[in-house]
Image (cartoon, rainbow, N blue to C red; front, top):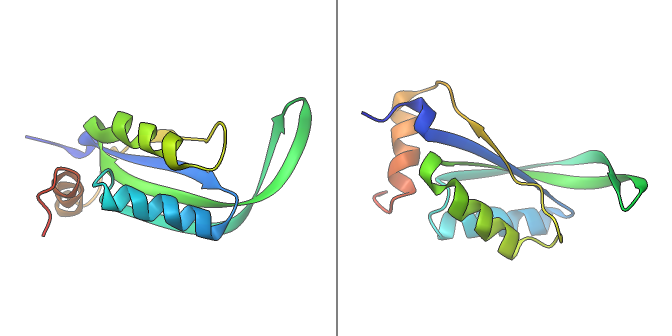
Length: 112
């Protein structure tokens, strides 16, 4: 029987709200995620090409099935405006069993 460990949160950041919303909507339209939220703005600090950067970004957090992470990652890389987009997957260790079942169902085309 599937458990919470079959569900994953995947995060990425995008340089505009509109871009983040496009990524989120695309994940849902392609059934790669059951739910995606856009939050921000945030300020991200990182080193790129030898320089410390500080940029305003928006976060996309998507919930998906563990076996959809590779397809979701490939899709984000394809549609994302960055050359090297952040894609970080974090396994879910618990939560509302009904919600987690809905996530798995939605990412398999069985949603209502």
